[in-house]
Length: 185
Image (cartoon, rainbow, N blue to C red; front, side):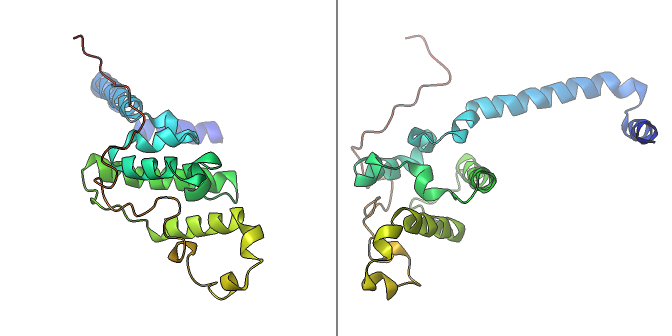
């Protein structure tokens, strides 16, 4: 039964005999193009928790520099705050959807000079603030009075300071990216 359905699907979708070679060539070119994009975009790095991955896009230099000089740099990485930790599937789904949105915006040069976090990102950061600082949050009456507020309403300098644009950290030291295409000089 299944084999019969598979053969019927192949009969319907298979190109005519005179088109088979062009279809195979075009499919090969498209496949190579996809792998080239994944290589150029350093796609495998996004599976890690390495903070240097976030500076694959130069617009993240100020955020990287401000995190690197904060107390959070000693105990966290970018994903600890900006990615959900309720389960592995949700973590990588969030990374994939957020990453695709970021890569589309940066590739098409649609980014704003002042990067702003989206609502989904705010919810994740808030959840992670509470997850990491739960022993502190529950022990003060001050936090109980502001349950509906984001943590950074009061802790706005943590950990990125007053980062507002690419010029916020003009002399920041960030990891130097290796060039994809090496030139002989």
